Structure formats: structure tokens, C-alpha cells
Length: 142
Length: 143
Image 1 (cartoon, rainbow over the protein chains, first blue to last red):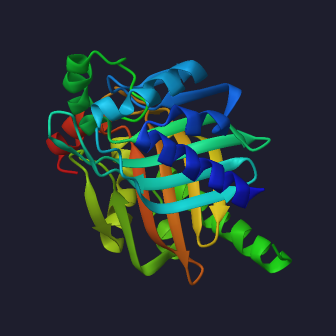
Image 2: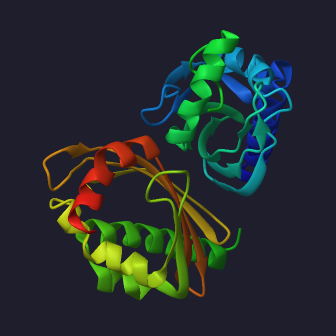
């Protein structure tokens, strides 16, 4: 179960990196939500529709993807924790390399909750680019 | 998963939780007893407290922790995930700083265990909150 949950989480993160909603959708339970922790302008709770909606516009923000480099993926019971570094370039050409710990809760092989931890200080540098592109304030990955 | 590896995972979890407890209590000796000789802590992100701390600095920081948060972290464990030699602990702090300002951060700490001790700790938290609320107190009082 834990190994299968890891596969779902890696698939979701890779789909997010590619902005591929069709690939991400089967990973996410109908009642899923995501919570970006902290007090950045990107922080707060997103419903399943918002998760997938922002994921779909993700490559507008980072045209060549997030390019996650996994440090570790840990699983036990219903939880999977992915520790990774992003290696993105923003639409304005600036590098954006945040550090992430994402805690997923899964049920029946689908993600029901995603708690996102990242450098909120760096995430706020995204905000002007998000606004300029007219994207939702709460990007799927900050 | 066999019985022995379950026991190791459980032991690893207890080490991780004991480290958080030692921090909360500002008990440097307790922390020292579970830290590997080559232990390091890595504060992720770009806050003013970012970077790598060697074992001695980890213990020194823990020992003076109650000067920063006199009533402790007031922590609440959200989840604990143990896998192989790693333990990820997700937790919330509801601390009050020495200057009376609330300091409620959310954390993921990823512990790497070797030889029955904590060898590395990767810390993820709200860096904006650290810089805005905690850093003025740290920088102004010689922590």
C-alpha cells in the first residue's frame, strides 16, 4: 500500500511539474484539498477544482516545468512525505528554486489532503509574476 | 515488513519525537544523548536563520531555547511518517516569544537516523514568519 501511495504521489508531482491536468486528475480524490502552509501570498487552502485549475496553468508561470529533484519520498500508513527541490525558470526568465516538504494523505490510492511546506519568503517573489500573467493568486506550487 | 524493521521504525520515531521534546524543554543534555557525533541540522529556505548547524550549535541553540520561548513550543504533532532510515514529523507550534509576541509556526522536520542516533535534521517552516517575528528578538538579544 505504501509503495503504491508513493507512486501516486510521484505521479502527481510530475504531472504538476508538467502542468498536465489529465495526468494529475486520477491521483486526486473527489473531496481533496491542498493547504499551502505559512503566511505567504500563496498560502491558504485550495479545493480540488482549484488544485487542478492552478496546476493546469502552471506551465504559464514556469514554462519549462518545476523539474523536481527528489531528496526523499517516505511512506507509512496513509501518509507520504516528499522532500524535493524545484529547479524552475519563471516566465520572466528568473530562476525559481524553492525547497519543499509535501505531506500527502491518501485514501484508497488517491490523494485526499496535501499539506505544502516551502520557503514562503522566496514564494512571495512569485507573486508579481503571477499577477502579471493574470493567474490565480494561489498557485498550485509556490 | 518484518518484525525487526518495525521495531527500528518505532525506535526512529521515538528518537525524532524525543528531539522535539528536548527542544521544547531546552534540554541540551537530552538532545546530546540522541545526536550522532557527526549530526547536522539544515534549516531550509532563505530565512535569516537558514543554513547548516553542526552538532555543537544544535545543542547550544536548544539549551538557550527557553530564553527565546519561556513557556516552550506548545507543540502539537500532526503526523509522523517513518520509512527506512528517515522519519518526517509534521507539527505546529503555539509558542509565545520572550517579548510576548505569539509565534505560531508550522513545521516539517525530516530526521535521518544512523547507528541509533539522529545524524541529520532537515527543517522546513514558514520563513517569512521567522524573519518578521522571531529574528528581531534573536538579533536584538545576542542569541
